[in-house]
Length: 124
Image 1 (cartoon, rainbow, N blue to C red):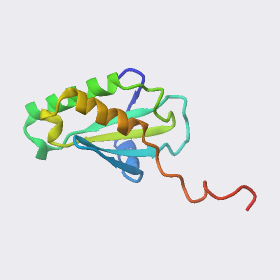
Image 2 (image 1 turned 90 degrees about the vertical axis):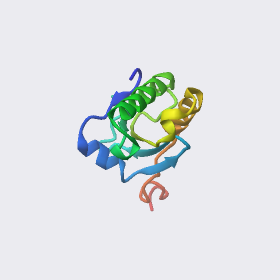
Image 3 (image 1 turned 45 degrees about the horizontal axis):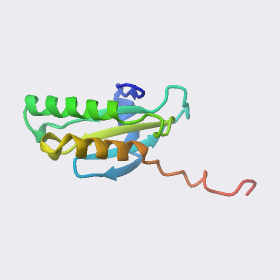
Image 4 (image 1 turned 180 degrees about the horizontal axis):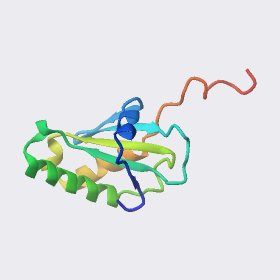
């Protein structure tokens, strides 16, 4: 995935579950700021396609389509210190690629919620 890092560890996926969710017609995105706050790797993306979507052939095709949509998206627009988990819906299999790419791009520019301590005024 050009421009984006890759989520591979289960701990990273579960950490993203605690973040913000963004919903679209073809996917649900979970966005969370990294605990270490490092932006050096750039934004990272993980894909999830569950068995309830269909058999292995359908799931693999959805993953290929999602990877292509992520490659088409700009990594510059995404927050470099965030992890994004894209959870595919059944519609990702049959939706036009343009729609899928638009949903992925919108999910990748979504920002996570700030912690309550981050929003307090300095010195208070």
